[in-house]
Image 1: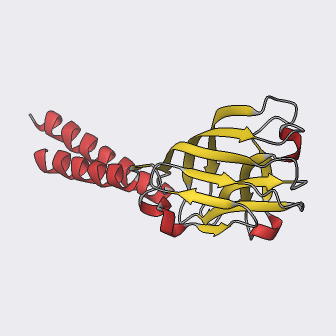
Image 2: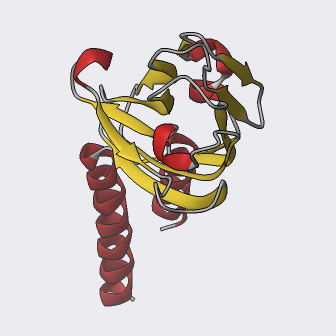
Image 3: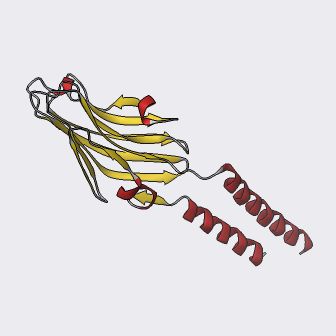
Amino acid sequence: MKRVLVAALVLFGFLGQAAADVVGFTGAFAPSQWTRAAGDGSILFNQTRIRLNGGDDGAESFTDAYIVLDRDWTISFDWNYRTFDADGPFYDPFGMLTSDTDLASALFTQLTDDDGPNRQNGSYTYFAEEGTLFGFRQWSLDGTNGNAFGRITNFSAQAVPEPGTLGLLAAALIAAGLATSRRRRQA
């Protein structure tokens, strides 16, 4: 009985390690893992935040930071935004990028409100599958009247356990239950 329980606890501990949280831009999400395309803007990146500064050179441009995910993840983050554009946030949206293939076909999910104030913030949680291109974009539609920036903080990612891994845990728990039941009947 003790052996079965120890085996179940070891397996459960292994599963806990496999699904450990990533807090900040570390591990699989370390700054070195991301591709950066600053256009005419700039990107500041460290283990606690990403800041994408949009361009203001008179032409439309994108400032992007993205990564291709190595497994299924549930990603959460806080975002802050500020525009210096005299026309407000409409011409400088900030948001998230996702794609099953590549950056050119990425879906832009706008986090900012075009009609909102020049300073905005919020929180977001997203489930992404292995192989998904995931990232952030500061988009400058007009490239004039002042730039904007988007900042990501409090980033965390929770690995989603593989179905087979959960099956192993279930099998171990069933075996422990059967062993306990058999010992009770024998006693």
